[in-house]
Length: 182
Image (cartoon, rainbow, N blue to C red; front, side):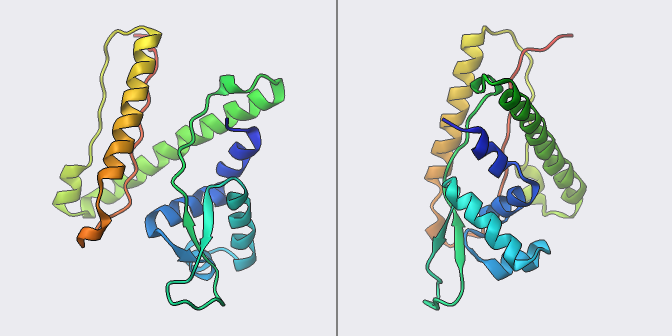
């Protein structure tokens, strides 16, 4: 189960940027993270330790074998949680704030792609997508869709063979399903 402390760690703006950076780079040195994100090395080290404590990143050996530098990589961990997981009033309020921050973060990343997409290759513009559907369902049917989408995304990611020599970019996929009113 996800704790409020895990959410505090994940949804801190600097740590969220570090998680994304490592997701894109796959591994990186502390100094490179600091330089590329315009942060102080000490600050990055602090945030990485907090992410490590929550099993979101881990230290790895330097590719060159040089033990003088600190290398990190993201751990494949999916966070699934609901505001309803937090019964305590103050924790529930924090979880609601973090949920709103997460949705805003996703929207901001989508808006950033839309701004940059005219400069992207036709291949990437054609590959990007937006899915929007309005239908009728029970709560159980919507929950089943959520499970099916999560499984599909996991299977899709696991089927990618990164040893085939093709150039890959970090991609973000998010979807929301909820009851709506006209």
